[in-house]
Image 1 (cartoon, rainbow, N blue to C red):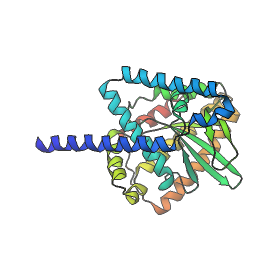
Image 2: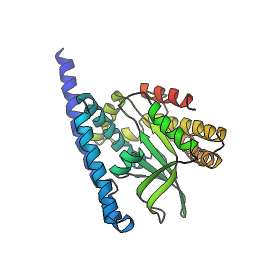
Image 3: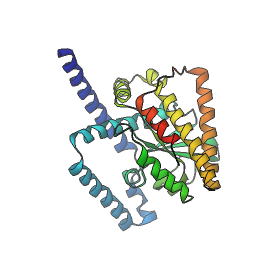
Length: 276
């Protein structure tokens, strides 16, 4: 009984510390809409900032204590992916992570952007919508992606600046996927993250889980887009899938995939299989 209580206290402290670190990471790295006032105009940017503040107040009023704890875990997972997709090369050696503005997080459902540089003069983009703890039910997230494909569209972000291309402002035609892990996996990652165990994170099987989730969804979305005759959208999903498949195969040469997957992985897989 005492051991279980101590474990719960340790988990709570670890999550609170990791959440504080995640917020600090995003405060420094997230794209700032204020820096686009010259492009969109101060009033337009001010409206977007007010939109975010209004949404945040609504979340604070409506979220239950359980939902607030779930959001902490989701934020921690997002921060670890943001950092280690690049630092530990979870998405390969040519990947750069970009944290979108809070506006694009809320409005467009984009938690992170991974930028793949294919050559010194080109890059391709993959937007990741991360579902870590709220629910293994991904129906609403997949419904949003399905609606975009039906319209012949892909995800966009309003505030974007590329490290590799002369792109500043709106970025459109971003293939969108959902990646997730369960609370147990996130707590394990959080502990390693706080202790700065970069080697352990660099070899952690969660990277294979994320890659497999991503590749499977890209394949399903490509097939669906082809079926509904949205061939340009299908081509973008197909191109991104090939990039990720190559990264997955290269990674298997140097890191063992234990095959370890958690319950959220299987929920996402089931949602992808039922897509369309």
